[in-house]
Image (cartoon, rainbow, N blue to C red):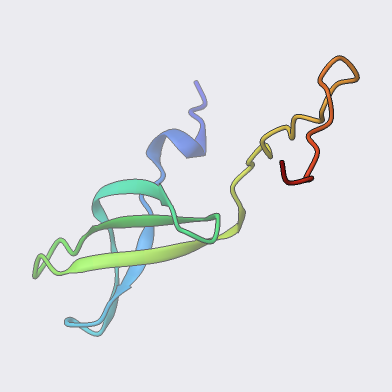
Length: 80
């Protein structure tokens, strides 16, 4: 029986404190402010926070812009 590779995928990152590439423990996928995906977790050896930026942007749907309808009267800027 074959297993999917994604079921056993452990993200790897570089630990700055250990100066080595290690598996990220307690990994959580996040979306950064600029829309890119990243993985945040801890180093299994020293417990330092590890952060790995993933490729590509997260799929975001732009909010629809409501256009004024013909039934709404136009506002005048004349002073009364």
